[in-house]
Amino acid sequence: MYKCKLCGRYVEDLTEDLASRIFKHLEEHKEYKDHKDVYDDLDTDAITEEFFEFVPNSCSLSYDANNNPIIVISDVRFGGRNIDWNEIKEYLMEYIDSSYEVIETTDVIYIGSDFPKELKGSEDTVRLKGANVKAKANATQEIPALLSFANNKRWQENFKSKHKVDAKHGWYRFTTRFALPVYLENGEIERFNIFRIEMLVRHASDNRLYLYDMVNVKKEMSNPLEP
Image 1 (spheres, rainbow, N blue to C red):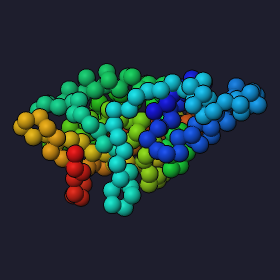
Image 2 (image 1 turned 45 degrees about the vertical axis):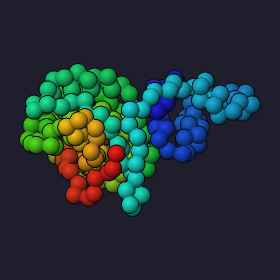
Image 3 (image 1 turned 135 degrees about the vertical axis):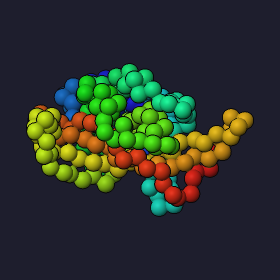
Image 4 (image 1 turned 30 degrees about the vertical axis):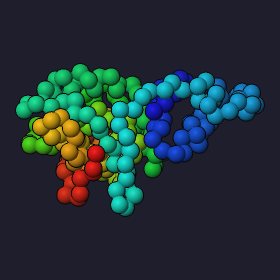
């Protein structure tokens, strides 16, 4: 994954069209367009190094039989019998002020300061049981990739007065899929179970889209991924 030095937005590097998306992103910046004739003499690697900071991914990308993407999370960071959501809230603070593009729709999703608290204490989080608790907790490790490869965008009107500003223009939901490892007693990975989750996004009065929660996580009944 690459972080733009000009605006802080992240560009996912798990797809083969990385170069085209990097140049498309740079076209949004006056600093690049005003000196494009200079940069035309540089190759893609040099331009990427000039404008982007590389941020290592801890996940990988896989596809199912229908060529639909699955974000493979390689480690269970948040485990045990009881998930510490306060720990996860603190972890999520690292995402604040970052932004990510949904590849399918080109929507840019921002992470606001309200997100960690909302996810920790949401009705969705409180009602979770069993494996879905661990699944939601560990999905937070790969929010950038989950947003980048989300699909099935749909809109719903906001009916709650408390959200008349922060969700003035309504709500969007995107569906995304991920896989988590299941370990044998010797610590080796036996398989990866596949889950789907909805990224709940608010359309605020400033006309930006902000991630609000990750909801309705559900384990798929499809065949698990092999390690």
